[in-house]
Length: 224
Image (tube, rainbow, N blue to C red):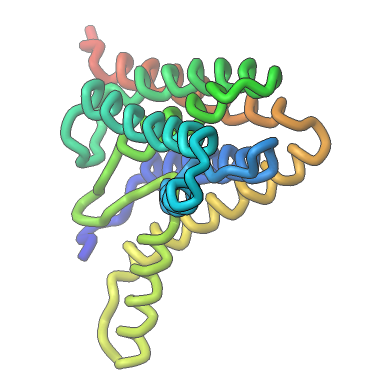
């Protein structure tokens, strides 16, 4: 059980990051390969299909996307360390790096270069691994399967008349809503401006990273 209210920076940051992932995933689905980029269940299924069909070019394409996501998780672990979410860690560096990666992904996708999809997946892996838990609550910001599962379990417990952690349920509902909002915005934007829509999450992560670094430095600067 979450014994105290969840800080506003966790709620706001979680909503923003899931919305960013929703935008990226929508762009991936509507892009020229119609490929999920923010989670790996779909790409792994496609990889299995293409291996079964002996389609070497498609295996290489999907394999690089999966590899990109994996390397993003590795990079996040190198930058931040263990996954418990707390102030003081190098989230600002990770977010500004994600912004740069997304900007490069846009430049590649604009020219229909496969590397763009790999870079976008790398950015999602970097973001998703930034925080794996908060006060015992598992947090994922680029895929919603676990969150929907946990909310469903909580719903079942309520039907059985059992107590549930309402703060945790609220956090999960907020993350789910953020992803949906991002998916709607990403789909709407892609229909009008195409892959330029990918610059929106690049700007948001960059601004968030710089803002976090300024906030962290202000807390670490001793008062006279």
